[in-house]
Structures are given as C-alpha cells and as structure tokens.
Length: 165
Image (cartoon, rainbow, N blue to C red; front, side):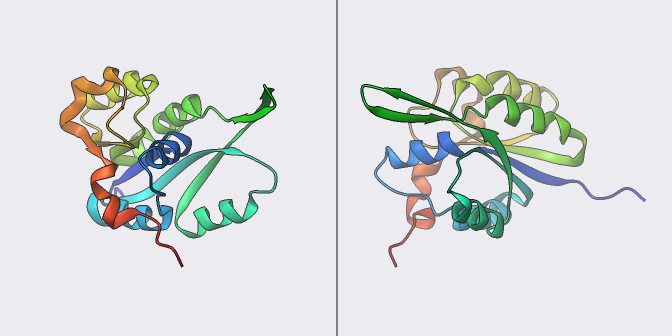
C-alpha cells in the first residue's frame, strides 16, 4: 500500500529571520510552524540554520516547535571590529529539497533569496511548488515570475509575531 504524500517546508532561517526583523518585528517560530501545518498541511518543516556553539537553547526550542533542524557550520569574520557570523545554507536547502523530492506532494519554500530561482523553477515545472513565503517586500526580482506563489509574511505579522511575556 502506498503511503499518503504530504507537504514539506524548506526554510532559510537567516533570510526569514533577518527579513522579518528588518520590518521591525520578531517572528514566533513556534507559531509559524503551527501556521504551516494548519494553512498548508506541512507535515515536515526543514529549518536550515548556521550552527553556533552556545545556541543550544534556541536549537532545542526550534526542535520542540516541530522543526527538523539542518545545521550548517558557520564562518566567523571580523571587519572594522565588527564580528560577522555567516552560515550560508543555500546549497543544503536545495540538496534536501531534492533528497526529499519523492516523499512530499508539494513544497513550501521560505526565503526571498534569488539563489533559489532554479529550485523554484524546477519545482514549478514538476508541479511540486505550493508557496514561496518571503520575509519582506524586497525579495529578489529573480522570483517575480513566480509571484502567483508568493506570500509576504509581513501580511501575517499580527498572527505570527512574538509576543512579549
């Protein structure tokens, strides 16, 4: 008997987090996971994130919220006495989307990064693209052709922002 296929989400955590913060609010990742499940029937949500020693509480929170965390080693650089942590997850997101390809019915991609255009194009051609969730209005012009798939998360601010305790 063939198992029912479900929808999966593939999330560029840094693009999503920084994009939302640039709009002046903080995303509640636990509420976002519930939203993905309820709105798009997302059974598995892969969250691609740079690994930093000392962030274990964050990683535990994300996993308890229902994400499958895919960690990327980070590179730390210093320029003009500013420390910058870089954990580019683009290749991992594309790779895992393709590894999981036959296991999901449709994919939700959460990123406004134009580097994912080839992935979006392929998923669209194979009728496997459900939505592209972008973190702000300034998403890459390379994704504009797929605007009918795009959901701007800023429109969901009231539902998904982190509330102060």
